[in-house]
Each structure stands twice: as C-alpha cells, then as structure tokens.
Length: 457
Image (cartoon, rainbow, N blue to C red; front, side, top):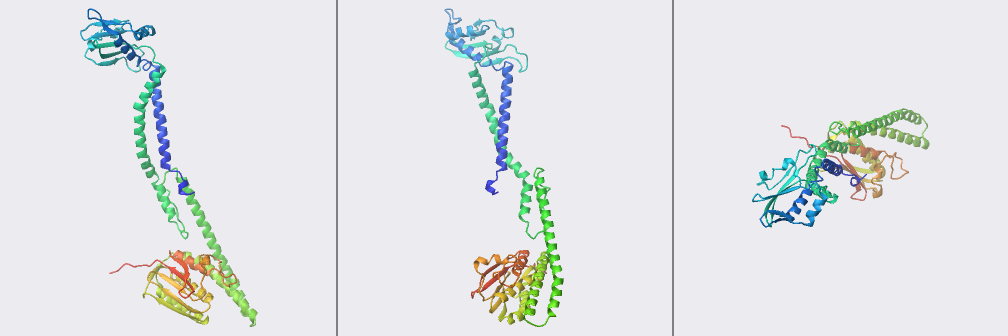
C-alpha cells in the first residue's frame, strides 16, 4: 500500500470526535428543552409578550384621564382564548387598571416594582408548577405604562420551534465551535505524542540491514493498541533470523561435506595415467573444490566482516598483485598497481577484502584475453580493476553479481566469484559497479568508506 492510500489517523479522530461532540451537545440541549417543556416552563414563556403587546395597543385614556382599554380584535381574541386572562396596567401617576383575577402572590406587587424595567416572576425550575408572572415597562402614546400579567396559553408549535432554534444557534453552536477548535488543536498533539513510540519503531525498522541479525523493534514506547503489531513484527524478524541461520548452517555443512569426497576424488584422479581425460577430470575436480571453497567463503564473510579493523588498501592491492603475478604472467598479462597516495585506510576484515580483490583480478585474467590489468587505488576509498578485454555489456552489468550468473553460459566458472565480491563489499557498507575501461575493457570499481583515525598525542 502506498503512503497516499493510507488514511490520516489525525483527521479520522478529529472528524469522529467533532461529530460525537456535536451529537452529544445537541442531545443535551434537546433533553433540557424537553424537560422545560414537560414541566411547563417553556410552553408559556413567549405568550406573555403577546398579552403585553395586545394591552399596549388597546390602552387609552377616558375623559377624566384614567386608564381604559379600547375594544381591539387582538384583545378580544385573547379574552376568548384565555378564560383565566389577567393583567394589571399602571401608569406613572399611580392610576391602575386591573382585568381578571390576579393571583394572590402578585396582587399588590406592581407598586413595589415601579422602578423595575422588566422582570419575570416565578419559582425554581424543579418546584411544582405554580402561576408565574411577567412585568414589563413600556413607553406608549399615552405615556409610560407598567404591565404585569400572567402566562397565557400554549405557544404555537412554530413559535416554539423558532425559540428552540434561537437557543440552539445562540448557545449550542458557539459551544460546539469552541469544542471543535479545542479538538483541532488538542487531537494532533495527543496523536503525535501517542505515536511518538511508533515513529521511533518505524525509524528502527528503516535502519535494519539485510546482514543485520538480532534486530528488533522497541516494544516499550508504543501504545498498548499497537504493541501486538510490534510483537508480531519482532516474531517475524526472529523467524527470519532462524531461517537465515539454518540456511547458513546448511551451506557450511554442505561445503564441508563436499570437501572430503572432492579431495578423495582428486587423489584418485591424480593416480591415473597421464592423458587428456585425466587432465579434464582434474580440472572438473578443481572446479568442484573451488565451488565448495566459495560456498564456505559466503558463510564465513557474514561473521568475519563484523570484526572490523583498519585495512590499508594500497598495501592490500600490492599484496594481491604479488600473489597473482605468476598467474597473470602465465596468462599473458601485464599486472600493475597504481595508487594516488601511499596509504588509504578503511575499516573492515582484511582477509575478506583480499578475497574480493583477488576474485576481481582472477576474473579479469580469465575473461580479458590478453593485454594489461591494472589495480588502481584512489584516495576516496575506491579500488578499481581495469582490463583491456571485451568489457561487460550494459544489459548484463547488474546481473553478473547475482549468484550462479555467468556472462557466457559455456564458461567454466560456477558464477559465485563476483557474487562473493558484491557480498563482501555490501558487508563493508560499500558499493561495486562495472564501468567501461579507458581502452575499451571492463572497469570494476569498489568504493569503500574511508577510515580517518583521530589524531593522537
């Protein structure tokens, strides 16, 4: 799965949390409004304003300046709809007009609240339902009036829904917006902190190399929900290590088991009379012995490369050239060593690096035909083996380092020499490539990390 195909845990959590908060807050508001409706504290809140508006429209003066009510359609409709309608109208001079039966708690209350602009009078929310009252001071055409009235009938459904919408928009939406903002800020921080251990485990997994054994992901710093996945990965790594060790033991045992019968076979072949058949059989036995040794080398280099020590590439190149000089001369080659500096140190296993360079030179002697072979050592840790043969076609330059791959199927080699070289270079954290030689041949270039020892007093 590509990274773009993965979903974002942060976005997923933010969306789910905001949706959950919105649902919970909406449910809370609906439950609260339902409770107010069921206890009678909501259905009659708005109708008192209708009574006050109708009274204000009908209020007037008689000939003596007293308060009177004109017969308006709105007031007539209220008297029909509300049999228990009551209200008290009082002007600034203390003149008062009363209609209906005023509940005892509010009978003498209007004069005491003369300086109050408006008020809602009633009881605690969860008290038994008892009459309430609404007081409001209004400026009218006949002067300022104070109107005290009780609750009217039930509010129409449409008005109740509008009131609920106002409450929702004025209370629920701002609270939800604040909670959403807090979620957008807090969730990424929480997720980042919770997944810090998982990021560390991912970084550890990215550093695991093919030659590294015993590597495990840290299980301590990850969330408990992710711990089973880390444990499963570690179990898989352990199984891979066990499989690798079994394969290495098999290769070593097979190579050791082959050495004895090959040695016996070689001894018996040497006892045969001289002839072309004896020569061919001895060559075949030598190939088998070389293959067994290369298999042993493959399983040995994985261990020897771990014990790194400073190795001088210039000295190593001269030693390999000296050892292979007779073979090169016998093949008609001029073998030389060229070095940019007197000493180039790398950290590694000297015998393994010597085998790698030896295999490259032997490969050049076997395939270059004739001419010259040069071993070049550069100050940046590069070691090149350059010949003047036919070279390696670009299409084959990657495959020749694979095991049992040969450029020419009729070649007598087993196809493990260059693979052994690539494994040695890889274990030394280097690289190897095949390039064109300056005179048309092949140029095998090993690049190893240069070791720069600290200056000592």
